[in-house]
Amino acid sequence: MVYDAERDKRDIATRDFHDARVAAGDGRILARGNDAELYSYAMEEYGVLRAGPGPVMTTLWGHMVYTGLIFLGLIGYIWMYASLYVRPIPTPPWGGWLLAAAILAVLLYAARNLKIEWHADKIRKERGLPTPTDSPIWVGTSDTSKEK
Image 1 (cartoon, one colour):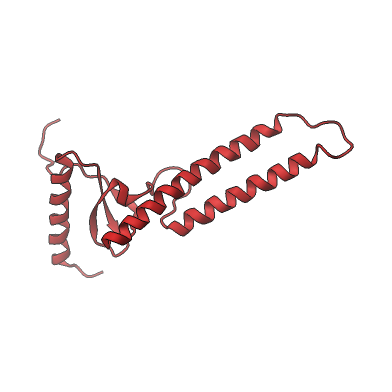
Image 2: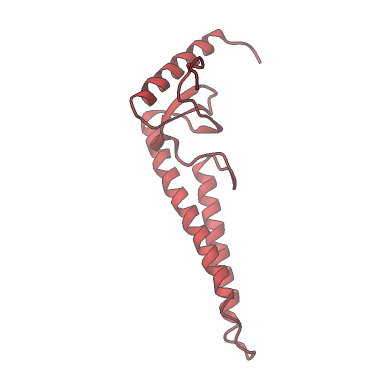
């Protein structure tokens, strides 16, 4: 990797802009875009947080596939469990529907994330911003000399 002094200058300018916007009360996330440049994304531009527990998806297509697979899993489970009621066996316990409710909750969460990412992707395309990488840099201020 080649050292780029100009990139350092652009990074410092972006951090200064980010610090000024955070000080003004804007909710912003400092992260590198897929083009390796540092950007200060507004919350609606960033989309779903790309870190933490659970699957880390960085694209709109990833969210669409994930939500679709959960939906298919829910349909398959309901089909399988409901088929137990039409067979000549004792009635299955109702507790099995709790798993269907849990899968539905995960589906709703995935659909919420898909909606947020869809909206953020549309805003990023309008503003000409790249998709953020999966490693946000949470910086509120660049002044490290303050006493706590």
